[in-house]
Structure formats: C-alpha cells, structure tokens
Length: 477
Image (cartoon, rainbow, N blue to C red; front, side, top):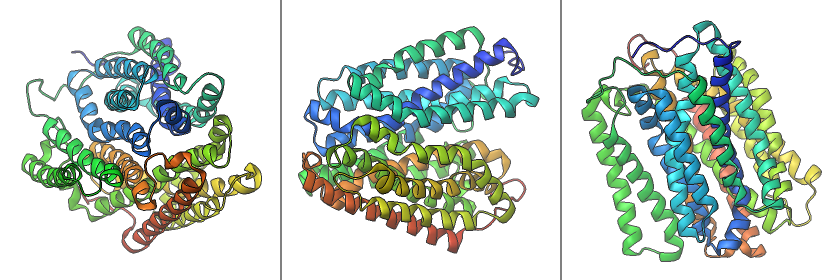
C-alpha cells in the first residue's frame, strides 16, 4: 500500500477526516458519561439489582480495558481506516441492541459487545489523525480533535439527561446511530487508508498479541465477577472459582508476556522503569476513586436527593469544564516543576471535594451543597490528568510511547471497573437497595469515604515514590 496522503487542516479532506474522528470519539465519550445518569431509570424499568447495574457499567469497561491495545495493533496491521470503520459499525449495532434491551441480561450482553466495538474505535480515532495529516498540521489536528471531543464529554450528561427525561433512557443508545452514519459517510469520503508497513500480515508484529488480550480479559472478568456476585452468593463455588480463575489468569498473563518479550501486547521491559510501574498503580487508584464517585453520585442524586436526570447530568459539568480549561496549564506547570507536587496536591484537593459531597442529603441545593464539592474534585483531577499522562510517557523511551500510553489508558479503565465492582460490596449495597433511600444514603456516604481514602493513598504514593522522569536511551528509564 502506498503511504497515506499528507492531509492539511484547511483542505476538504482534512476537515472531513477531522469530522469523522471527532464524531466517533463523541459517540464513545457520550456513552461513557451518560450511562451512569441513566442507571436509576433503566434499573427501575428492567427491574435490575445492584449487580445488574454494576455489570451494565463494567461489561463495557471490561472489554475496553482488555482489548484497546489489541484494537490499536489491528489497525496498524490491517488498515487504520478499515478497523476504525469496523469499530464504528460494531459500536452502532451494539448501541441499538442496548436500546432495545428487554431485560438486564440482554442489556449487559449488548454492553459487552459495545465495549468490544469501542476497543476497535477508540485507538483508531487518534491513529487515523496521526497517520493522515502532514507533520506541520498534525499538532493542530490532534488539538482540535482533543478540544472538540472534550466539549462532547462536557455536553454528554446534559444531552443524555434531556433525552432520558424527555423520551427514555433507551435514547442515550439510539442517538449513536445517526452519529455513526455521519462517521461512516465522512470516513468513506475523506479518510485515507494507512497501515504500518513494517508489520507482517501473517504473524508476529509488535503488540499483536491475542493471547495476552484474552488473558487480560479473563483476569479482569474473573475478579470482577467474584466482587459483584459475592454480596448475593457469598463464598459460593462459582464466586470462589471466578476469583481463582482471575488470579491464575494474572499469573499466566505475566508469564506469557515475559516469554514474548518485545512482541508482547505489554512488553515486560516497560516495568524495568520503577517510575512507570508506580505511575500506573497511581492511575488505578485515582481512576478507581473517579469511577466509584460517578457511579454512586448519579444514582444517589436521583433516588435520594430527588433530582431529574437532566439536573443530575448538569451536576458534574463544572468538573469537565475545569479539566478542559485547566489541563494544559497543569501540564505546563508539571513540565516546569516536575510531577510530584501536582500528583500529590491534586488527589488531596479531590478528596476534600468528595468529603464535602458526602454531606449532601435530601433537598440539597445545587449551588451551595453540590457545586463546591464538584469544583474541588474537578480542580484536583485537573492537577492530576495532564501531568500523569506526560509522566507516563516520559518514564519510558520513545519507542515504547504508544504501548505505554495504551496501557495507562487501560489501567485507568481497569481502576474504574474494579471500583464499581468492589465498592457496593464494601459498603453493603446489594439487591434492590439502590431503590431504598436509607440503604442508598448509607452506602453513598461510605463510598465517598472509600473514594477519598483512595485519593489520599494516591497522594502518599506520589510524595514518596514519584519523581521527575529522566529517559535513558534505548529502553525504559
């Protein structure tokens, strides 16, 4: 295949390629931000238990965390536009199946499928831009994609809340269909095909590791199943077996990846950098707090405080706006002074926000009771996100930049996945307890305390073990 043309941002093809990438990312971001808002409504309509709600969130996260690295490798091998389009169509079909769900089993299965489509689509959005645009315009294209995708993240809860209140929770999934049609038409018309010509189609190739991806999914799935089903089943044979399978899959995964060396999905040479290892543990801890917070807050504000889905969606918009506006400044600050201070102060500020939100009760005012905590939490995250990403990439040599970034992305999703699985067990919420105000209020306060504790643990990790990255030539630092 000849090299992809070098697109310019001012050309029709450049604008069309940007449109396709932004709409596709918008689909994924919309789904990730509004599903939590929809949980009380879909739970009531489908007569779901707490575990059903957990799997509705985690089925998607599990597939995305386990297969996003493989999705990027497939694009490099078989064509980035081809895999991107496959992901878009797959995601859209799964979204329609989600919207048509008649019971929780159907919905959860469709969410697993949707996550698999997202694993093909998510890395494709960025890699298409990276491969297609002229080097002089690449930064501008990626910046535009990042900014407008962030706007969709901010608007997602508002649009989703309005759809839920005006029509039904099903429309947060159905709205992906017209978006997907727009992406496919734009991509077919303007997006050039490209692939990594150094990768053989017949085997090998850096990062093309199906065994590793399957073992990762089995590890996350086994542990998640054990955590989610333990409240209802106790230490049943099924729960114990799932836990054993999950732990065993972790051990086999490490063995297989070590044997594959640099051809593994996750080269173990990366972990020769102590800083890279510490930063990814930090990522899991902080994003676990974020995942637990968003899961509990959306249900609590509707079922206990009595807010509408639209107002619930509005509640966290300031957090997203702070991230959009403040992240570039936080990244610049980290570049000047190093990551330790932002990664220490940020979690402490975010934890203070959660402790404020812990006091929210029935009849709460948005402006005086909810907004201050959300602003503090968002300000804390703003100090963390950009410095963390920069530090992860700075902790390894440039040749590992793609896989390091992909693994850190997977680590963040795994953190949210494990939090949603474990927190209801830790705070004693099971069955239909989320529909009972007293039980949910008690669980919510406990969950906010646990999430604040995770953030403080992250701050301690940062102050003790995180330093300014110093790359060493050729391999991880």
